[in-house]
Length: 133
Image 1 (cartoon, rainbow, N blue to C red):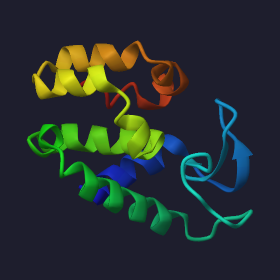
Image 2 (image 1 turned 180 degrees about the vertical axis):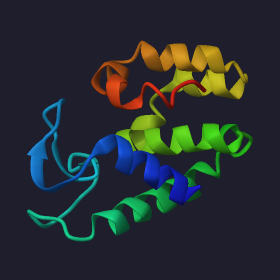
Image 3 (image 1 turned 120 degrees about the vertical axis):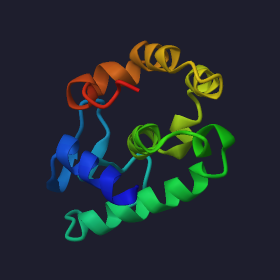
């Protein structure tokens, strides 16, 4: 799961060894590593992939404590894991209507909820292929 999600993120995020400002005005480094969500001390990054997989492992472990996540198939879990990386776990958990739709197994509604969020407009080009849920 971690390996597949990391490849997805590497492919869709691109890489910058230096801090840059993303589309939403957040300082970012590496593979879309949002410095407003996660902490990082340096101005350049040399171990970006390790940092990415560490975050994915941590988020995956936390997500498995939620029944709505644990009961999903592998592809849907990967999409949620990708969201948790981009939004931060606490940011993802604010998508209450999205999560409710997943709990109800209404995946079409879950996608609709995401598509109506400001987040979708920020990343739709990079993520349009994976949100077929």
